[in-house]
Image (cartoon, rainbow, N blue to C red):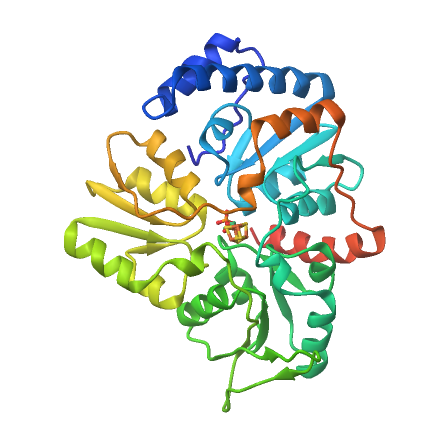
Length: 357
Ligand code: 13P
Ligand code: SF4
């Protein structure tokens, strides 16, 4: 599942797709629903050929979509790489807006479609390009690492981007004693913890001024952005699960708080969590991440038991449906544009990340 091998479903009939969906999600999905989804997926795969398109699907896509239309599924880092290397004319990004923008930054001559304009992200919304400029003015000469979960104008103000899959490696690659790391406070604190750095997190006042409450030396400057999904998990959740299921392995995304990450058995990007589940010999596991991904992982690992703590669906990823993906290809909507002056500067930061490997 995390292998990211291309999946060619363009030759599959409606019945073939129906059978695949039945195998993956038939346990909890009524047959007539599977049939409707299979017909939609078949139409999408036909349109994809007609438009010479590639469909990229983030690991958080809802199960029926995840298992029926993407050519590639994966985490932000892998999908950025796939977007960078595609030879198709059209990229349909079944993910959120910052992901589609990253694809456009890497492929200015291609048409990049996102099926819904409502697919935002609380982290990307937490910071503006003005905020980054204010931070750079307050902490001059310090390099800026920006999480890929940001919009293009914020990336354009940055020296290098990172994802949850390479944040520590990117930070190390700077060779700098001190750096700014934006905008996810928890990811920054997790990077600081892993690399033995001292972090401060300035606050923004309503008038835009920056206040630093922490005193004393620091190596990292963070920002107060939070993922509205991952901030909901708590150490109390983990303790309750462990007391009921002592043999469970607990995996958390690094957008969870440092306390939750410390109390987990493993923390990593969505792909890293998928690989961990594939390889573990533990009889049961719990994923502290977005809950559609849980269903996708459970479908791929039927021999292992997944505990369902999760009731947290990302409302932004949830905007992307099979119907909207079909409409995206049918009507060539919604075209993702990035102004060229911003794109070239954002490209440098994204390219530098990809070159780190
Ligand atoms: P990954 O880079 O791990 O796929 O995470 C993206 C994301 O939005 C997590 O909430
Ligand atoms: Fe953004 Fe969190 Fe949704 Fe990921 S899960 S897209 S970080 S809001």
